[in-house]
Image 1 (cartoon, helix red, strand yellow):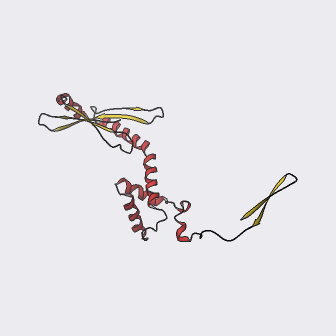
Image 2 (image 1 turned 90 degrees about the vertical axis):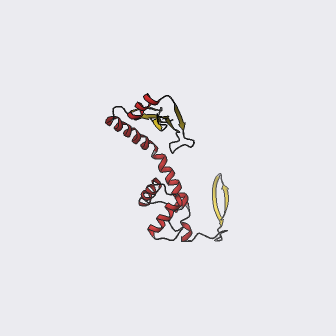
Image 3 (image 1 turned 135 degrees about the vertical axis):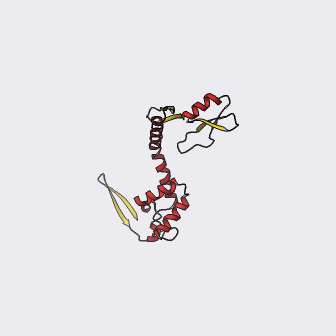
Length: 186
């Protein structure tokens, strides 16, 4: 398309001078449209399946293949691609972080209700999000009182999905066996 700008008596007018029906590329056919981001979507039923499969540890490529088999479509014919699955799983895990922290606090409270010797403590940041949490079972506390002469504190090298290192206190009993004393998410 060619346009022309015309200014007459201080008023600007735009006019189409020439419109060619020639494209420098072919338009996409229906089979190719599904690759455009605007056409790639994951429906609610597929989102639930993806979430379930991701929670049990399936890889993104395995999730894609399972969905293809369930839907009886040829490989690569889903209305979304593997990258969309990866993005969805990542967005789900980041939105579930706060609910996961709340679930952990509920578990600790229930354990405290069942076992008066169970101890836990936590801190929250200025946004009321879980910042740190420490917990120890009653048996572990009693074992520490007896076998707390040698204590090893180990933190995980890689971070978990909460981006918090996990720290573990371990000791040794009188038989040379390892004893768990407590845990902390830093």
